[in-house]
Image (cartoon, rainbow, N blue to C red; front, side, top):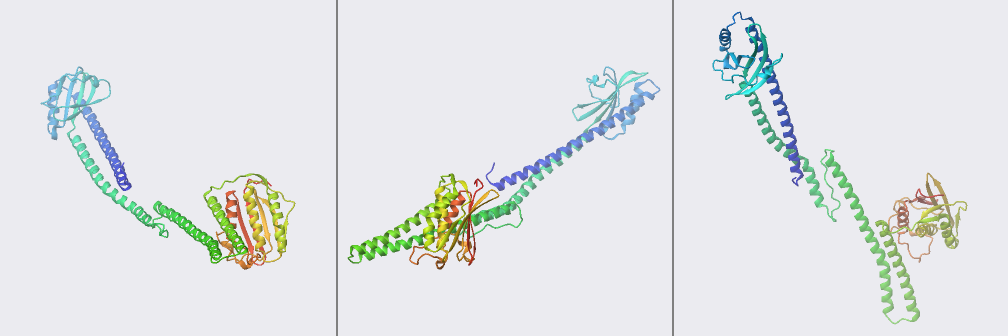
Length: 470
């Protein structure tokens, strides 16, 4: 098969058209052939009966007189296409209407004329094909004889030859028209594909905003164009997220690196005492810890995105994990005048990675304390409905502004620091916590949802998958 789809469409269209044309011509030819021969057979049967009547009503026994009579009757027939013959029961010729009768004598196929019904046979002489109608008859005066009518099929063959010629011409013209018509159809059909191909070639990493055109026909090609455009939209959005993520990561890494370099330059600018060098080293260690945390978070996010972070799941008591985290954060909450309250009657068991779920709960409670904005209360509750279990962490803080709420899961996004209850000199959050929490829960088959009302507080829901037992 040719590699070009356009060529294959052209050949397919030509083949189908030719096949249909050949079938139609064959049906017409066979129908004409059968119709003409049925007419010939019907005509011959009528002529046999007429010849039989002539013999039956002839008063004279003289066959020669009968022969002269039928020759006189058929002599005026144009084309001399009809012949009457009378044979004895052994096939020997008795009389004939053709003075130049050259058929075999005796007739070799006399056995086909036996019986009460007429029999038909083809015979070919040197000039044309003939159709014979034989009827076995018993006369009182002539005994058992065979009445035979012969018709030359010249006109039938000319009609069939004309039909064959017309059919051949029709097939030839159909081949030409279908070929060029197929080329036109293939070219018009493939034009939108060519436009899509050209547009796709122009799409590069620097030109992801380009889209393939639609023909407007709302056909399969348009469906392909829509699918490709949707794919390009997803790729463009993904590349933009990667570019933004890379830029944000570089910015976050540059801050502690710049601080480390400044600290080192300060220490080397002049002789320092042991106490001063110790302070420089302590500040450097703090920046190293920030760099380590950023690097670890970035690696964790990359592995979670790629599905390469293994989950070491095991049946765990989720309420016990939450209770441990709450006990860990209770002193910090007390320092900020915040009450940590957990529903002591709820129990929840799940097949989870306890370390990662502990990290999620710790991050959410830490955020609730950090962004409370003053004294308040953080409540942890459990609920189960429709096979889905939820850990709800609600605070009574200042809430998240509506314009910031849609962005809280974006990487490196940080809410207004004025809402934070942390000291001004405390290390800033790098804005990866909620993104990591959501990725961890999605890896478990769950999700993280946030609802917040400005001035009333924030509700964070940890949604666990359906295989949870409570």
